[in-house]
Image (cartoon, rainbow, N blue to C red):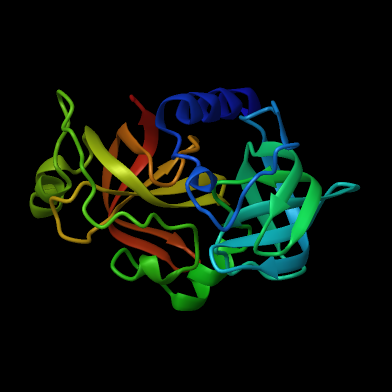
Length: 246
């Protein structure tokens, strides 16, 4: 299963990875002596935050993974000292200069998304259902109206919601932008998709796949109605056993 997840992550990063936000933001620059080092882009990291240095556009975090202390930089984050977070890959920069901090980091990893390890507890405290699940803290896409190209055989989210009884128990294919992902809850990853056809409605898919927030994907899965997982995970409509098609 670990090998399967690693292969899935690699495919997602190669084809659907988000653009590197650090390339166009003037407040974070790399000096002339900076060096980029190739890293294992499909590795899933679990880190504990030791120190936080916020700036206007980015947050610099000193983290601990196993016995290794190092620095990462992410988009503005509400990370907290002492808590555990997950991320995939990370681009290693040597002699990385932050003008905002007036500091050069010997080594720094540029990280796209951080996912909190306690999503389950946050969701449970809200006693969420499908409609208010978005209140949980997680990494969320900034896209307002995703530009989704409908693939052959795909069904719009609005159609599934409006005619849920028709699709109950069937395997369907949908296209959408990943607006949020909760990793490793109850042994599954919880992927939220929007396609713009149903206002701000995001459809939840449980899957073994890892998907980058902001990426546009095509997923097949089984339509399930009135699903109660317990511990506050209750959905009028959910897609289970999600598998990436594209």
